[in-house]
Amino acid sequence: MKFLIAGLGNVGNEYAHTRHNIGFDVVMAFVQKHGGTFRTDRLAYVAEVKWKARIFICICPTTYMNLSGKAVKYWMDKEKIALENLLVVVDDVALPLEKMRIRAGGSDGGHNGLKSLQEVLGTTAYPKLRFGVGNNYPKGAQVDFVLGKWRKEEEPVVQKKIEASVEAIETFATAGINTSMNKYNNLTIAL
Image (cartoon, rainbow, N blue to C red; front, top):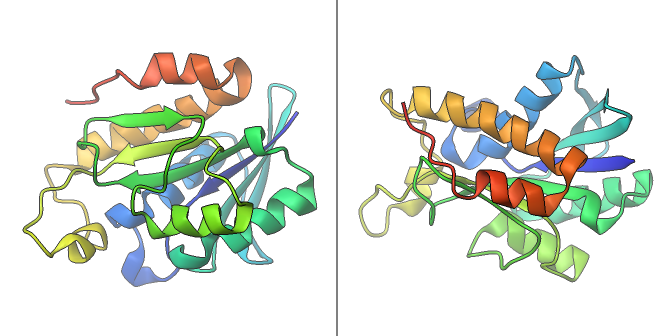
């Protein structure tokens, strides 16, 4: 069983550990937990992890957010991974910080990374883990908010939720999408 775990974000130090890069942070935490290491490869940082008789191809696209679909499609084709075994980890301003949502499909919700995937894959019917980042910003300031760093008081919740997201990836791969949704979609992660 082979899975593609794609964390969306932007490359470059100025984007590291921002809300918009939480996909990178979750996938990196997953790889680190399972003893993998990233290498720079075509269109992405790539790590291969073997766990519980499963192979995880983990990518952080280096195409920048708006072209994420190109990297995801390349690695799906190269590794011959079925659409239902793809899991895209992405930030979501429509969800509060203490929440995450796993869905088997669903729209891009205005997210440029997901728009790119939809264009390239020709469908919205692929699994997503949406990591709530909240929407605590004034009107017109969404870009600055998502490209901004976490506030000090948010960091412990973010860390706890990254750990829960790593577990959600494991559950997705071992128990399936429905079990993952039932287990994590109603979870509130707070201190």
